[in-house]
Length: 272
Image 1: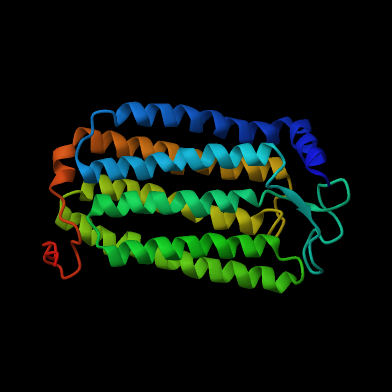
Image 2: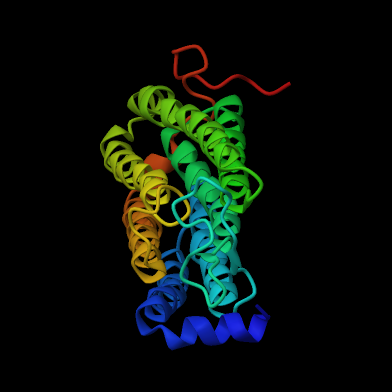
């Protein structure tokens, strides 16, 4: 299908179209709100948390505009063995695949992790580990969505993506939880950590039951709303809760030691 035909397909489905336009609107409002909330923040660490978090709606508004424009979507013919092989929701039987979402996640979720790591006072090694594993999770998830040569390989890529996700979960639930206790930000960190973990677990589940996976749910609009709904909470609500706390507790953020948790002492290593 041409880009124009993809654009018309999305526009002709009000439910599918609304799931994308709602995110564009909320991302735009979030950008304005977060800029206003951070107007008086002066501490460098707090400012970096604000900048990292602000990147989330900035990336999202660009990504969702790409989706509604028909630039980053397509119809893929599923391989033999897939429930929708030779069928699907498209005019020629292909499965609607909004592959641009993976680009969104590959650029926005590292910013979420950067903000959380800074809040926990994590060291550079743990930040690098979490962010690298997160990007790898998104890229291999994209490979799973785009593989049409073999049904088995789609699930192999899916398993690799989940393995990278397990690394991210370990850093969040174990390493950074300990760092946040030392840094004195455990209360807000634990709230945001649980919000992130619960919602992020929903993405591979939706993929698994949706048209790209087992096809238990075949409607593109229903799947799109599932992803969009999780994005709204995992990105915009998460960001609002984080930035509200940082703006109100800037002095506490300023006292967080860089690199806590590396030896359990909570004392940052001296620069050479």
